[in-house]
Length: 141
Image (cartoon, rainbow, N blue to C red):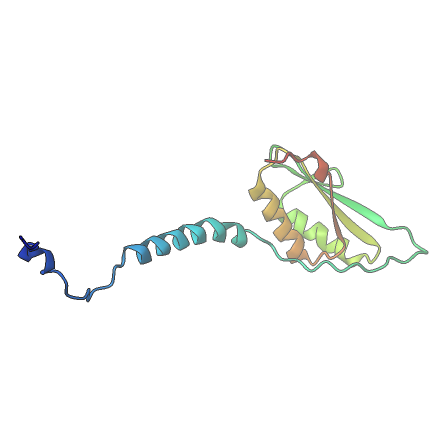
């Protein structure tokens, strides 16, 4: 009767593995890196604003000022074209009136960058009575 004898090289690698397999660790780190790269830019494009809702004086009418952002990048305040400096000065006057409120309307085809810039000017001017109009015109992606 012949006995089975394995080759000598079959048992030569029976020593315990002393190194760590880093391939799965690198895969997980790459996935996390991709997730951070995707999620951080939208979080950084925010303009935080405090928007209290004080009740207007019922005896006096509320003055509504309309700020419009057009498709070509132009900005209109109450129907008059304004640039960034003029807008800041006029918004300071709007803030001084306790019965004034500002309504922002943006064209659905306007760029996001100019909208954020105008929103930053509104925040720096200290406008707290603020509303948005025409959101239904925006298309869902």
